[in-house]
Length: 409
Image (tube, rainbow, N blue to C red):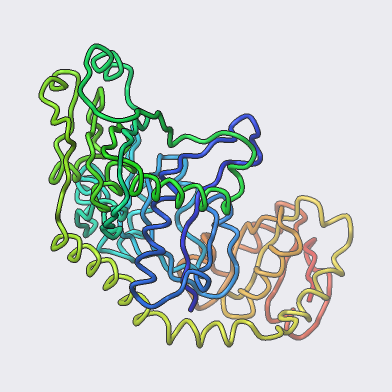
C-alpha cells in the first residue's frame, strides 16, 4: 500500500488561468507533516495532482483529503479511482447545489467524514452521512520558537476596507510588507515550485513577522499553529471559517476599531495534539483495514493477463460487415455464457443494442433488459431481420440461418 498526498496545481490546459492559491500547497505541507509524525518520510509519499487524480492506475494508495471543492470539482473527482482509498480529514464543499445523491453512498463507504467547516458538516448530516467537524489540517503544524528579531508586519491579502481604515492610523510598529497567497504564471503548473514557495512563505511567517494581518484562512490557521501573532480581517466572515473562530476573533469593518494590534497569539498545544491524534488514527486505521487485502489483490491483479473470451471474440468478428453497423440483437440464455457474449459484443460493437433476452428458466433482467420466454422470438422474427445469438450455440460453434434471423456461434 502506498501513501499519497493530493497536490493542487494550475490547469495547464487553460493557460489564461495559470494561477494557484499557495494555501493549497500549505495544506499539503500539513499532511506531509502528519506523515512525518507517523515515521513516513516525505520522499516515500506519492504526490498526485488533483488534475490527474482520476487517471491514477498504480498500486493501491491511502490518500488523506483536506480540501475545499465546488460542485464541478466534487463531481469530477469523486468517486476516486478504485485503487485510491480516501481518508476524509477535512472536506469542505461549497456550492449553490447539493452534491449529487449518487455520491452519498460513496461518502458513506468511507465515513465518518471529517469536515473542514460546519457548513459541510451540516450538509453531510442532512444526507445521513456520519461526519464530524475537524477544522483544517494546517492547524496541526508545529509551534516554532525563534530567537530572531521579528520586525516586519505582513499584510496578506487584506481587504481594501482594512487598508482604508489603517491608512489613517499609525499603530503597528515595524516595516509593513504586502504579501499575496495568489500566484500567477506558467510556473504554477509545477508542484515543486509551489512546494518550495509554500515552505519559504511559512518560514517567513515564523522568522520575520511580528504580526500577520490577513483575510486568508490558510494564513490564519498555519500562523496560529506556529505561534505567530495574527490579526484576521475580512469584509465578510465566510462559512469556511466556521471552526477557526473557536480560537481566533475575526474582525470585520464594523469591528476594526476593536482590533488588538498586538495580534492574537494562540497557545493550544493540547487541542493540537488531539487533532494530530485524530488524523493519524484515521490514516492508520485505513491502513490496517485495507493494506493486507489490497496488497494481496494488487499482487494478483498485476500479473500478465490471458486473452479472456478469445473464442467469443473470434466468433463475433465473423459477423457479416453489413450487420455490424447499428447492430441490434437478441441473446438466448442469461447464464455465464450469455454474459460473456454480451460483454464481448459490447466490447467489439460499442454502438450495438440488446433488444431482447430469452431464457426458459430465469426471470428478472439481464443488463437492464427484461428476460422473456422463447415465444417472444416469433414476434421478433415476424418483424423481419435482426441478429440472434443463442448462447449455447455460440458455445458449440454452430451457425445456421432460420426464420430470417441470423444465428451465429
